[in-house]
Image (tube, rainbow, N blue to C red; front, side, top):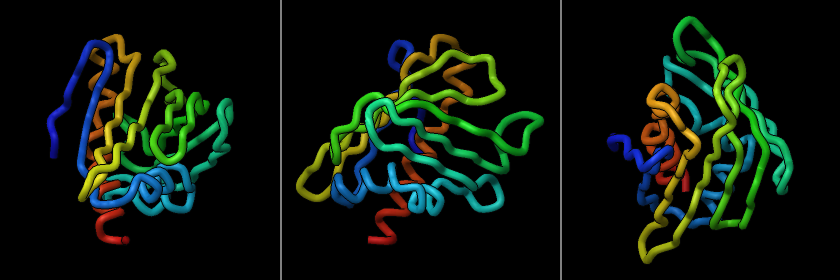
Amino acid sequence: MNSINVIGDAIVQEVQIKASPRQIFDALTNPSELLKWWVVRERFKTTEVEVDLRPGGKWMMRVEGGCGPGTTSSMVHGEYRKIEPPHLLAFTWIRDGENAPETLVCWELHEGDDATTVRVTHSGLTSESLRLRNSGWPLIQSLLQTYLEQNI
């Protein structure tokens, strides 16, 4: 798994995925697809996803399992800020039950000859504890990569 790359108040991760930007964008925005790949057997799984894919539209994801100290479920939600299918998706990220500021997640998809470069930037992480709490992006990218490369 990749190490965490911190730049200022952001975590920035990149991975090459052997899938088209459209396939990746759909996996990031289609609730039925998110339910299939945002999961680690016997650790956590996504159980509910809602998506209103338009600028200003709301999104929500509920995860059951290893969701942090002393909790068995977690809900994250936010609002879509920028949508440019199939190359850019930006949304706010708010984790319920935590006294943390709203942050921003941006997925950028750049098509190459043999693969798409997938860059996720999670910004607004103004403290070390916020960066640590939101350091799972290498795992999430790995789950996305495995799902797409084994199912296309």
